[in-house]
Image 1 (cartoon, rainbow, N blue to C red):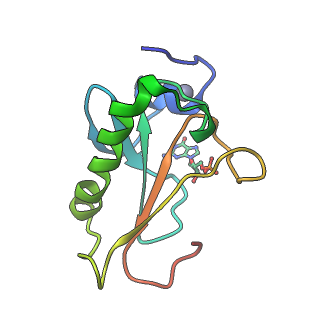
Image 2 (image 1 turned 45 degrees about the vertical axis):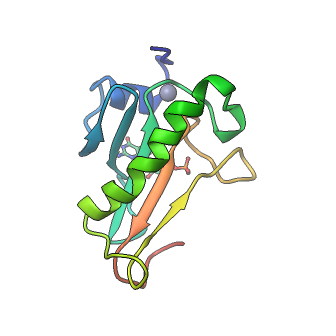
Amino acid sequence: MSRDSNCIFCKIIAGQIPSRKVYEDEEIYAFHDINPWAPIHFLVIPKVHILSLAHIEPEHQAMMGRLMQCIPQLAQQEGCNPYPEGGFRVVTNTGKEGGQEVHHLHFHVTGGPRPWLRG
Ligand code: 5GP
Ligand code: ZN
């Protein structure tokens, strides 16, 4: 598995930095954001170190499909109310102008009753 020893999210996957785990399988890890914007806020990441959504390659297609498919299940598990009255938001910041601070691909999943701090 390709990891970057300086990457904070690779360290979280490796258990070198503690996190509140939401889900884990061979290719995907999900954990609560340390600084939530909404009543429910977790991050879903590939275990492989991909810098951003601008760095997706054909070899990532199957894993990305599975990752996206996980999101509704995890949102429900974490307490998001059902669609359409409830729902959730998925955000992927990409690059400096896209607001990305951690350069390991991640999907923010936010939900719960509004108002939210952001988003
Ligand atoms: P970005 O701005 O890159 O889209 O989002 C990075 C997110 O990672 C932020 O929402 C931030 O709160 C979260 N984050 C940064 N460091 C840590 C950490 O050590 N643990 C957890 N759980 N979240 C983190
Ligand atoms: Zn990484």
